[in-house]
Image (tube, rainbow, N blue to C red):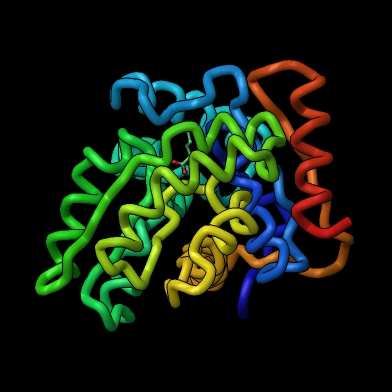
Length: 262
Ligand code: DGL
């Protein structure tokens, strides 16, 4: 007989970016309670040394486990790249889902043979990205660029500013000039910049690849495999915690509401 489990799923990011994954999880798994931890105090992670990110990710997962989470989604590419193996080993048998850079679907879908990948510095120089690009990028030109300033813009709710448009242009236009027809968003903050990204890529025919729906589907598979689906007997709860202050927690809550379209 299939078992059920009404404890929440933990969702963790350096800050507000993981809310793009939170939104995909909520859509894919409407019966599940979600406990979101946006560090906030140490954001951005993207330029920190890998060892420091591992320590921060460990503290975050420990906090979510202490709150009673049944599974944790590391909704941060940078923390996944720096720490997922370590976290899986340390917190076994609890399942952990990490962010995959969506290089594989982009390399399979490209017609021009040129794929652009936007991510943080630390994700791009990590083993995970190098391995994935080498594995699926044979015969494809993979152009990687750091989304310099993107995370800070999202954290300031400045996604629609002229500054945001200038930042996105600086990173994306060189990819388009080289013929990229797939632009992979390799950082969970970046889908908040989708309206600007669409403006900048308009007319180029390029597709923007957001991996969050695939991560939500992967989470659903793991819930089934481990017998962890919510029973559906109670309404799901959406809670928010942070290592920053109460004001930041309120901002997480209202950004989540806006991301959900409320
Ligand atoms: N949202 C994160 C990611 O997916 C990290 C951004 C940051 O803190 O630099 O990589």
